Image (cartoon, rainbow, N blue to C red; front, side, top):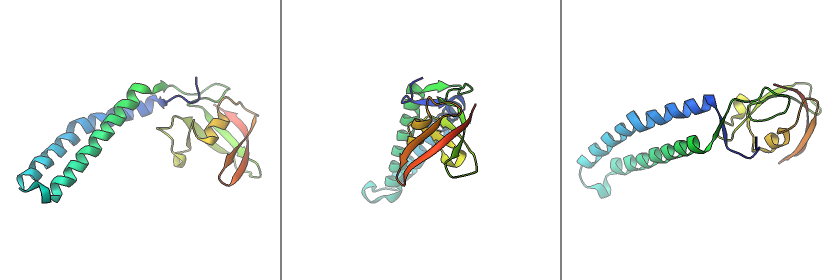
Length: 155
């Protein structure tokens, strides 16, 4: 598995497919109805509702295109489970100078969410962890300087 590739988990793929279905169906229909109503109000050059709805339509179509691109180009991974850290691996680490261990999951950049402990394989932390195993020590640069971690467990 290449570290720099685009990856998503099966769970994220299903969520994106569900979102795409919603956007292409009810959401697109709603915007088209709003657009028809805004056009019926008259003079389009000074019609704020029309311009707002056109902007909303543009954002919707942009999101649809983005999701379709992700679903076409990203490789779906079942994730981790081995001794070597890769996409989907759950990693328990201990930062130098701290006593509390923290658990993270390595995910593709589309799924990264630090509040849920999901770090991107393309982030400095994700890059440092990738390919390592239990017991290894890693270090990487942050805006606040170099940080060091010990890998306590990989699953």
